Length: 371
Image 1 (cartoon, rainbow, N blue to C red):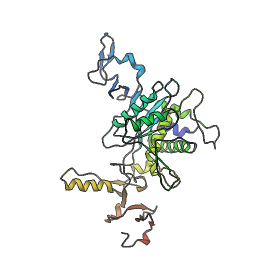
Image 2 (tube, rainbow, N blue to C red; image 1 turned 180 degrees about the horizontal axis):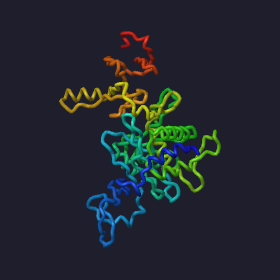
Image 3 (cartoon, rainbow, N blue to C red; image 1 turned 90 degrees about the vertical axis):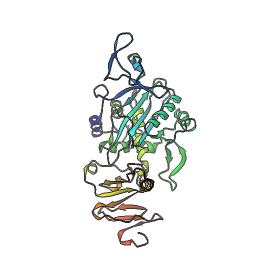
């Protein structure tokens, strides 16, 4: 099994089954982007006199018990203001076999874990309809970073999302092994080496408690996801099984944090111990600080641009704007310098400054012009 017993136990502890956990919405989006389903908190009688529940949509008097087989969306949490989201999309033919999946991952803030908050899963949906709902759900979740697998049948849907819907926040393929990281390619490409990075990243994040899974089906797919040999680059489900939601989840996690990978291509894991420990560094987002200064000068509401962190390596991305123009300063020895381009730290807490040409300077080489 690619995801071992420890990994499966972590997921089992965080599952929220809609059948037993109150407050979770299950239903479907119509062509106007309105959500329908059965609100379990509001029982009523249908027009035929039979017991049912009101729809989530005010004014809708349809008895959705009759179309419950259309329910393909589960919402564990509605979009929250100020949070960033990343969506992984795995697209199938729509002929009743493999599933098309739209997986919404809420990115953690202040060291909190990423979390599955919404999933669309359907094996009868046409590929162009997948594009429609990916665009719809992405916009609802704060213009989430949309990562669609650009392969086979999915190419057409991905092209529609970019060209017809002109979705504003599409994933751009990154060449992590190249001098020019950003490419001119849109969407996600699954290849033998990238497949391994997907499941290796998810396995580490789940076991560390940094990626919270809510779906019972996703756990079943993880349990069935296996490699024939230890050194094989391929893995998959058994005959009759599925791994569509799993791949959508892995894409949403990896693409969200790919830019934070180190020189080996390994994405750092925010450990549980660092989430609960007292902050030792003051982190500052230079982008938010500029907006803060502009807001104050204009007499508007100030913008938050500082936060505490235990380890600055896991706070390289701003939890407010999710940008990467971040510096860090030790709280025990507050540094008032404001012209530093980037700050890193040795394990002993000493500062490493990155100069304008990208050269790293150790503390004993600092000069006045560098500061």
